[in-house]
Image (cartoon, rainbow, N blue to C red; front, side):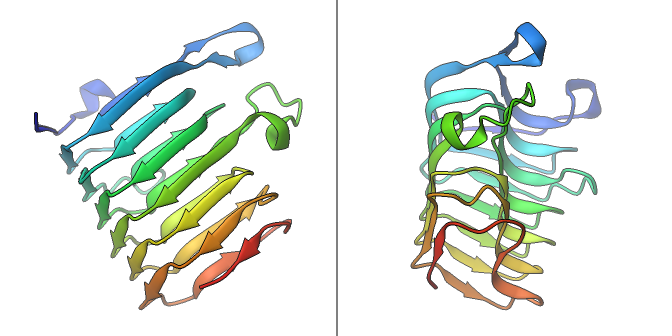
Length: 194
């Protein structure tokens, strides 16, 4: 089945929103074991798809998330807040303000368990073109594989800010970025190859 979504501000501007339940000290309980396939989410106010606290999930197979122009968030796909064990594969994320794919899997309660508990995902085989900042942007996510993506335009192809431990960036086709093809900022610890 194919579907499409355009969200107005009345539904927080997400084309698709999947959110775990807030728990003790602001920690989310994860929504688990789901797959998002074959959707088109364009022209939304905030994100094409936002997954907050998910685990054991995939966002796969020709999803199109684009033309998100929110200047503070504005990504095609956002995976955040205690998410782990995920696959983002075979998606088209084009013309978003921030990033085609944004990963920000951090420890919500501030106990700095990021390296142990969150991340453990892959962003592979996606096409990210003409996103203003990055094709794939990672704020926090250890144990991540970013590979076999086709990325063009924007400031950076892959921008990895913090918690790169145990991560690999490999075999991406990156071209036409105005700053860097791959930028590892903050703390290092992963491996990068273009």
